[in-house]
Length: 343
Ligand SMILES: Cc1cc2nc3c(=O)[nH]c(=O)nc-3n(C[C@H](O)[C@H](O)[C@H](O)COP(=O)(O)OP(=O)(O)OC[C@H]3O[C@@H](n4cnc5c(N)ncnc54)[C@H](O)[C@@H]3O)c2cc1C
Image (cartoon, rainbow, N blue to C red; front, side):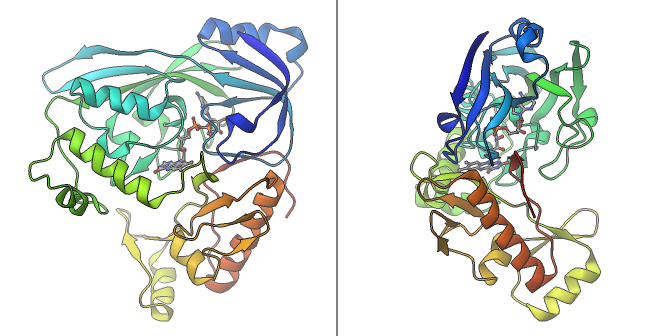
């Protein structure tokens, strides 16, 4: 375990917010993590677990301990006729992990290529892209229960996965630190290319019979052309979730906005495109000082320079209130806001 005081968080969050943490403790094993909790000077302080920092917004300095997860390792721990069971340390970079699996011929994660962040945060919000969510390839995870110091295993049911949700974002928030995640990957690939522009991208690449590597390359190419690179422009991907409304609300909106994109859900509701609502409310590409919603992706909140976390949060609040006023829909933030906010 390594401990630093008054640590700058700027290199550790993709918004590039220049906040400070009272302490940052880096750990690479369960024992090293327990050693952090044993440190008497840290015990009275609040703590927060940080992976790649690609889904957090710090609105202030953090007066506590940032636990930086660096638990590594990737191994196939079991196999059956159809699957490889692959365990990855929570501190592994997600995209490197996906590329490693593809190189071994372990199929199933190709559509999730190039999502920033680490393996451990994946189950937190059931990361998803291009028609696949982590829950579709998930087997189990092991997490340290902070109150007892014991390691507990969670299967998919215990994780209670939903759209950008899990038990770790809900009832068990702040109670567990995910140490590693085991995936059930496929021996025989089942490609999912119907979603988004994957098929047309494969066509453009001149590939007729794609394999998992081709699908991954197509996804990478689409993502690179559509999403701002956090290394160039600070952002945390989609800032808001796509709202889900019941049929009555949907019909009322469709009567007013016939062109509104919508996707029926399995439980008879409708998912709407938050990016469309934000665009129609006039916020797409609108910049106010150092902050704004991206010109190509209205759902992505951007730090154009040295914006503070507070300024970014305030901008998101303006957008949220305007969408509420124009459409009667309360957008929900997907990004985890850390620190004080005032409404
Ligand atoms: C350009 C861009 C594109 C993106 N595209 C997508 C996308 O297509 N789909 C998608 O779902 N997301 C997307 N995201 C969001 C983000 O990449 C994911 O949510 C990712 O899983 C966050 O990982 P992280 O390690 O950076 O988490 P962090 O930001 O470090 O943490 C996120 C939350 O998880 C908690 N946490 C982190 N690690 C652990 C752990 N080991 N145990 C317990 N809690 C933990 C943190 O406390 C925090 O609350 C995108 C982000 C960016 C910047």
